[in-house]
View 1 (cartoon, rainbow, N blue to C red):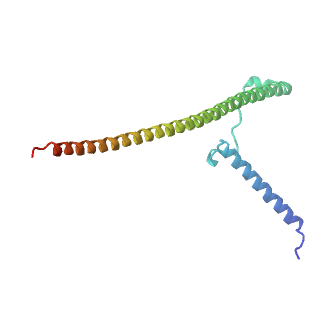
View 2: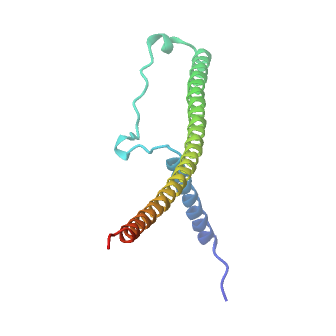
Length: 152
């Protein structure tokens, strides 16, 4: 009989599932074009922003308004970049579809041309055979004529 898992085992399983989900999410980001920064470039203590004297003299409400506007501006810039990226991706998808359609058309055209060349070659070969047969007949008839009109 199997025993029920303890709370410690359940917590350990949850932690493992969360870690696996986080790893899967990271893999998704990588496959979607996001690149992870190398660990040596990640600074655990990023440098502090050197705010100017004017900013330091503002009251808290003004600082909050300024930071909210700055964040809104950064969000807008990020949105513009994402919108452009999405449009480029759509354009890429359309171009890939165009290339596929063109490739299919080119393949069909090549097949048609190959078929025409094959037919043309068959006709030429058949005509060559007929010419060879006719040349043989002409030679045979010439020999018959020569033998029929030989003086005795």
